[in-house]
Length: 186
Image 1 (tube, rainbow, N blue to C red):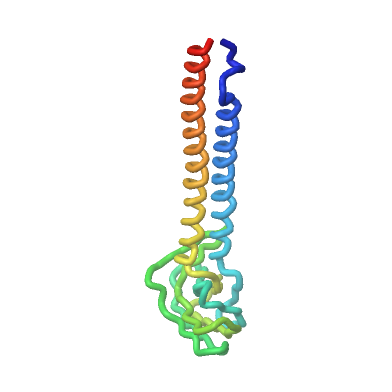
Image 2 (image 1 turned 180 degrees about the horizontal axis):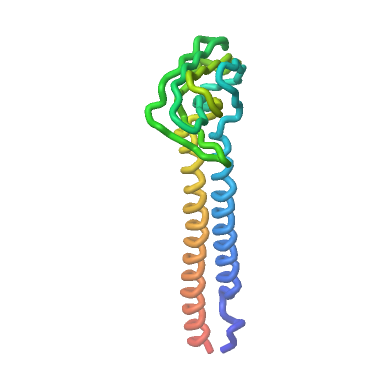
């Protein structure tokens, strides 16, 4: 019996595993490119020195937060004003830090802004030294991005491999039954 007579053809298995490989590459790529973007979204996009007043565009959906970068402990006091409603600064429930380059940013305050708009923020410290403040997103806001990246890393390759396994089993079973039918006829 000629193997070319058997149906379905073996190229179905190769095609299925090619799709699985493409799914693995896509999942890893989405995870690898999404994670740095998530981290960079957290790092303060607007920085300022103590005593300086800055105008920042805040949106409550972004979960804005105030960060400090300092070599040691610093006693700070921040005030927020302006905007379409009265925003409030609340202490961060936990000490959360993020490091980018040579700076370590510590989340110190969360901003409860009632609506999106431009707000004026001022922070002061008693200590001297290289101290910077910044406004970025709450570290918990990144949880969705990280979870989405992990889901892409697991679900997309998993689906591709599962489909390849199913196609392989179906093709091999059908080829076996086709081989039996050809042998019975011939």
